[in-house]
Image (cartoon, rainbow, N blue to C red):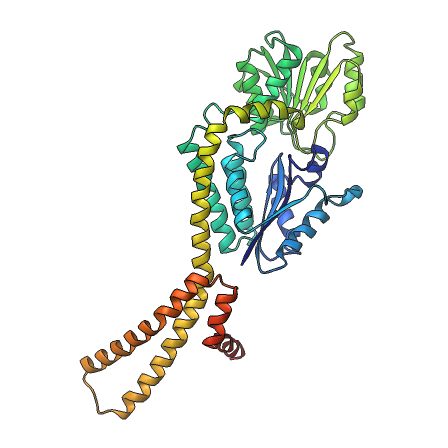
Length: 423
């Protein structure tokens, strides 16, 4: 059985491409239903940095994942071929383990990705799209991510996209103590942004969300103020920094809305940091006077500095990942040869039972102890005869390779399987 991965991420595709592939958590079930048209089993992992499709099956599952990804992204005439990467088997396994460990994130060691990997697995299981190899793969990835965080310092005082967004705002406006900030989005990212801003000295924080209850709860926890989405204009007039991190199918802040706000405050600059994927702010806003618009890809320089600082811990994490990849590959090998070993042993047992039954009918009546001893003797003979073939399967078989096919032909296991199917 092959394990295949196709995807795009922040290293291969800019945000305007990634946002076309982004799948909100609440839409994972729909996305998996679409994937089912191309493959029987698969997992969709989508974050602000990546969208990846993991498949397990026979030859051709790579093409299935590629077709799904291109179809999912192919609207608006977008040519995806130069952005998509693919990995197979051990390379795909290692990549997922690196993702779960936070090594493939824009911010090395960030915590959110581990929950997102688990969420992707849970959605696939719920949709009956996660076969045993995929379930085991993702469970091993989650275990790897936890080991890396427990056994290394890669996540110690780790940054997040949200805290880096506040860093960027500080670089643009200087001291944050006299600034007012508007946070649009009251989910996990919005909460991290707001708390990071408060810790950096921002005195007044406004929070807006399409779910007013969540905006009110977050604002109350920060001694801030909640703002209804329909009443953003006064908040835009008052705030120096706007951070957007909400999921929305269209622009929350379009050019017209920002132009109106700027016209009412011509002498005050406005810093807008859009860390949402898909983006919340219309890109043309960047060309306006006194408006400084940044998106998630603008965080790369800060992220690179963070990666260099953690290089020693990265090497420790890679050693753990190497160990976990070897463990998964060993499990996978055993999983793949197990049906062949079982078929071989079952055929031998069926023959033994049949021949023993015929023999017993020809012999004088035997005591229970004599019948038991004869049964154990024939069983022992079969086991010893199969020891070498089973060792060969485990050494050379991979479920569908030349070694497995040789054993199947020698013992005519394929014919037995066909006979069983006809019966």
